[in-house]
Image (cartoon, rainbow, N blue to C red; front, side, top):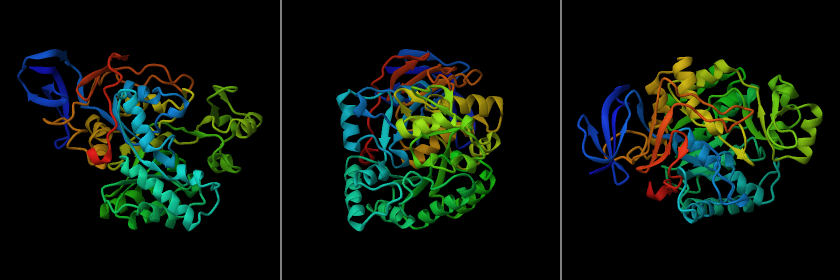
Length: 453
């Protein structure tokens, strides 16, 4: 007897770029049946009129900070938008070592979603006492490399860099750090050195890194790098290089605003002039100015006294966001980051927004292609497509069931807790984790170590 039978739904067949109607059976955490029959099952889900998709994979987000309390926040937001696997440790930023993160998930008896992790270079840069614009010594780099090796041994699937956050790091330093392991299957990801008018220069640097490493390179959140007037040229550069080396790729999110800590180098003097924006284009997300657009006075106060506050910056162009999403290359990811439960709605609504706004409403990309960008492509990038990202017998039963006619994001810039619409079920490792926006099992996920993938 099957554990779960999902009947009458339609699932994506990516090789043909179509949705196919069929029944899907789950047993022992795996997809055990696909066909027209209705085998006996302990639970039957009628998915008539629904899409039965592989669970969404967020290849770029920022995980919980368990030092603030051993409870889940952003993972819950991920689950409520259909995500079943997320990759943390991006932009060189980690809230704890990979071993600490993995052990805490075990201690908590699982997680709302499955997690993978990158080792964040900037995390160890700071611990070596380096300032944003400092130049590291050979001894400091060696110490950082040892910490990265420890993260890799603990199960990290690659290494990430936040070049803009600590611009003292050189291109050669990034290439050197990427070589701490000879494993060509690891993923290297980087937040660019500069955005806007300097974005093409930043992309050229990342392509140069790709040319000099034996691993895959991921350009992080392309929209916040190039959606200020250079997206067409940026995509042309990436697409042309990918024709000769498909190890390069990028991710992007479906909003015309980015978010990061106000105390970071991103908001150093000259940033507003570079974006051709003003203080009123910056939304403050935490007390004492929660949901207020900045003034020069509140901006300066937050920079000086609340540097960890997340700020939402409305500086990008909508047509360029759509271009990055609809481009034949690229994946969709949230870049979700949360502080004190607050932040940008991308942490809670990225995937429902893509399927509702960009597929159904704006029609900039078709449904199956969009699903591919949030399921199979990131799974292939992580080299787990035999397990996740596709509907096939033997795959892990990570499944999101949604109504293509109603799915849409609910979270807003003023209230990220507003519910998404159109997601009926989220199944994680064969267990019903979410039904109609209500948690059923919030510990069905696990840490996936690179060695076990």
